[in-house]
Length: 363
Ligand SMILES: [Zn+2]
Image (cartoon, rainbow, N blue to C red; front, side, top):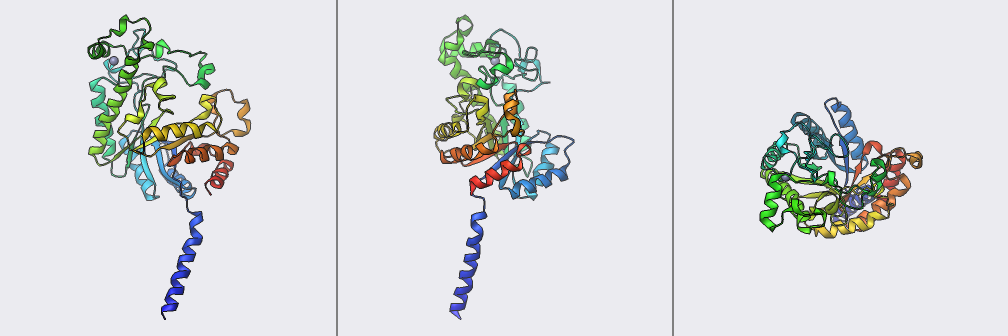
């Protein structure tokens, strides 16, 4: 009798074992958009489809509490983690006093740099802090929201990614004055009090290391302030950041993100933006994981090229990204350098060939 039980247990164990190689070990996340016109039933069908391909969590771009609540409920119904992805510092329609001032003395709501929507807020403004604490706490309070995810949590790009120079007709071998913030009276006075340096009297402010650090700290302080508000709701905070941080994020957008009190990092390791190949992921993720030092998982963000068959003829680098034959190197490099998982920008751009390459890699 005992033997029979043993045989049955062994058979069950064997069957369970047969099943395990199919199980997805590597967490896959996706970034996707939703709006007031999104069909929630279709969205839930997409969730189910992504889940069947190994996706464990969705990051959806919306800050309307009603839409977030419904989408998050649908995500949980499909067994997915929900990150409420919210662009922060580039936002129109807020009080004029909240906007940052560039090195030329122009306010970002009236003279946005690069593109019309680059209306950048001043991360040192106390009312800006209060605004985000309140907004993020409200989103975090939605029952099915697992993480609030900060995006555009930075100053404008004082140096653009190398792959974007041609698009904007710029050569950016040094900091670009129209994109260099914030020179409002408050920031200038606070910096002088802290360091004794009058930044307005300095010929080339980009050479003042303390001034760069001062602005990195301003972003860090804002993030940590928001983190307190989100954690107070019993929820977690994730953040979409530039690669590095030292090799790109700090110098380009003043994100010293390894100092942030964040529970999951999503560096946007978009190699094509930096005119790099998929082999670059291994190096940059190695830096990212070491910088964070194990205090939070690093999810490697991958930019997918939808029209990959005609990538060579696409001029705009924002239409580039990984083609199916590059997936293996990008994913393997990320994971072998210590990334906990990957995040796809976007699942809608993943062709059947991309999914096939990803599945093969993860096996
Ligand atoms: Zn300021």
